[in-house]
Image 1 (cartoon, rainbow, N blue to C red):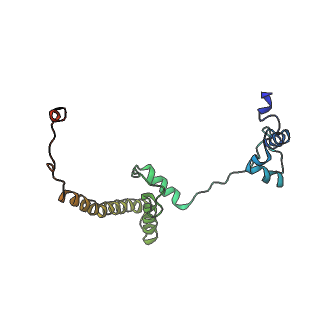
Image 2: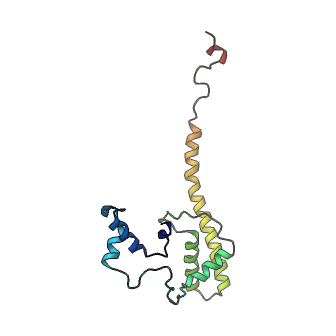
Image 3: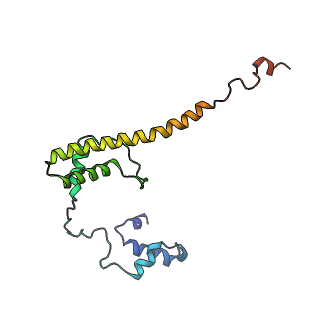
Amino acid sequence: MANSRLEKIGTIITRTQGLLKSGAMKFDERPLWYDVVTAFPPLEEPRYDRPAPKVPVREIFYQEDTVRAKFHKSGKATFAVNLLDTNNLSPTQQFIGIYQNLSTQGAIDEQKVYETAIDLLEDHMRQQRVDKRPAETATSDRVKASPLPEDSGKTVQLQDIFKD
């Protein structure tokens, strides 16, 4: 009986149909995909022993992929990136933008464009850190300006608590 759970015996569709016919699975509890597969059955039966189709995989490369790879390989890309932040560009995206702007502007060789783009990115990131810093120091100054008095209340001795 346990052998019938193997993927070699029947397909997922036939096994689900068997569960529904036998009453082991209620019709209301059928999987979401079941109705779709029964309405639009696959052209070929989805079996485990069917050979995979020989489809050539196209290599997809963008122009900036080589620049991105060189940037990450150089070790300059050692920073954390918040993937949920869609408002700001990551440093890699900033670098690629700077690199593309420099490469379209002048007739300098590729190595000079790369080095200049790294320098400009470092300056840009340094400027961002400086811009964030005054906001942080302003909040810390407010906290320092209004400290709570240390001796605001009565001091309690342990002996006084257990005096009764």
